[in-house]
Image 1: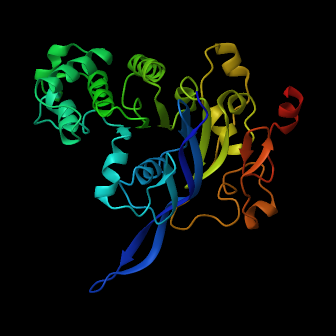
Image 2: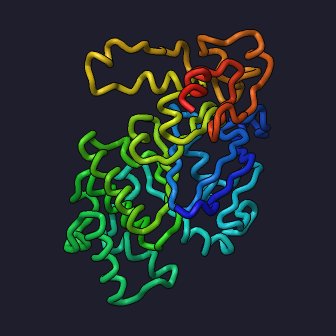
Length: 335
């Protein structure tokens, strides 16, 4: 890992207008899907992005890739600003940034053979032509654990895990530097999840890839991430090196997510104290005042209802946005 910044996201915002009206639509509110997110990913690094469904993870991923135009903020890839660029000017940059989608069934064109799905991006970007395309497709299929003869089959002839391997091969076709994996294993069986995660780790070591690994399960993210960022209602509420966050989570929301992850030892799993969140996730149209998490937080006080906490470095390389962080004494002793 070189430590050079590959991706820099600063104060990224994506609000979707809510319109109402019979004759003339007018904007009556905004869905604050992404509300001021900042993060960085270095070359060769994996950043895990975790949060409940609906917290804005997928919207953030698409805004980074400029698949949906951000409302405001900055996205820099290798120092080049992407926000505001035209589709034509973004084309060479997009070759360096690819995505693995959540649903391996819906993300592949059912009318095209696997060889076409993987090979067409190479031809469109001028990376290969003719027989060279077929050779590269077969090499990619072999690299992701499939047979070269699978290039002549259609997506419906494969299992979910095999389809996700095809999606990974398609993402690798343009030789990217950064891959955004949007919940790539959530639709797969547990045994298949492990295979796909191990494949992604092997490919990273072999090709020097960087990942933004999006998931709602902290247990999955633990085995693949160098750093982990926790997202709630469109904001990053905690970020730290993976081992530090798992051992000493500071934000109450991170504590709640971790308490839901099962421990392999049955006795330890039964003995530990669980933090069960009450109530539903607030609407991103009208989030709570102050700390957005205070309506579900067991440690919330009056200051949490009026004062919106900012991300601060509470331990070395460990930031959190909370008025009453947990495990601070434990973290200090361990350091």
